[in-house]
Amino acid sequence: HTIPAMSILRLAQVRAITGLGKSTIYLKLAPGKYHDEKFPRPVKLGARSVGWVADEVFAWVAACPSA
Image 1: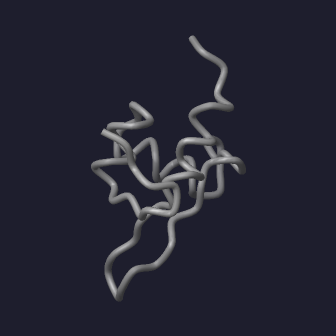
Image 2: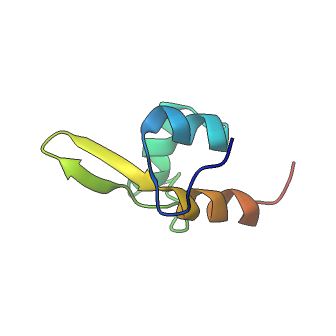
Image 3: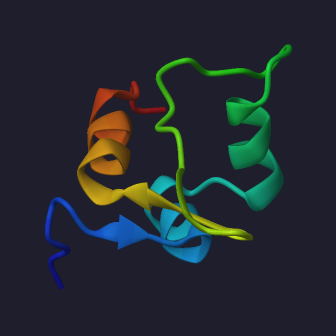
């Protein structure tokens, strides 16, 4: 299954692709100890919803050192 590069991913999809949990994703976005400047920023979709650009998420995963 392929996802077009400019698709918008919802949190569940970002979790599946990155292997990160919801809390970890939001910790990477928030200022502080776990902040990751390279982690893709979500885009606002509505008053209470956000999504991530698919190619930014895939680029972040590709740039992560493998464990």
